[in-house]
Image 1 (cartoon, helix red, strand yellow):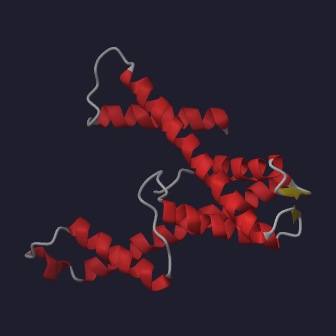
Image 2: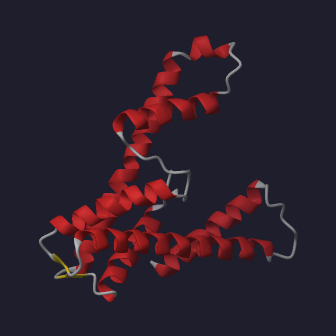
Length: 186
């Protein structure tokens, strides 16, 4: 999975609130605008889930031919998924909880279009500045998430018995602490 749903909601809320606070936009119904942005992000990321499934199906069709080959399944999966995304003009994420710059740009453009078309939203800057403001707000929210991740890592590292960072226990505790941080802010 890519971004967890609580993070999607936090990012959407943060983006809309930043834009309103900076007087880039106003909304007659800010909560509804936040929900629209969250839906847009979630729907965009569902496309990647569908690409994962399609890549798996393509590789399953050729499983017998791949058994004796020297190509690793993961590398082949990534290549097939990338080709499918390129055919559809879709920008891929980098993995769970990560959005590369290209993905942030893609989402920023989609959010700006959503705001431009939303009858509840009034914008006070030219369209290019709106797009740039949305992009900056998304980047700010992703930086906040990196800080959450660092806090969760620090919390696991602060446990008295030294838990190796590569271990399943470390990962499980990190996930638990990270989700707690998301829940507190949500």
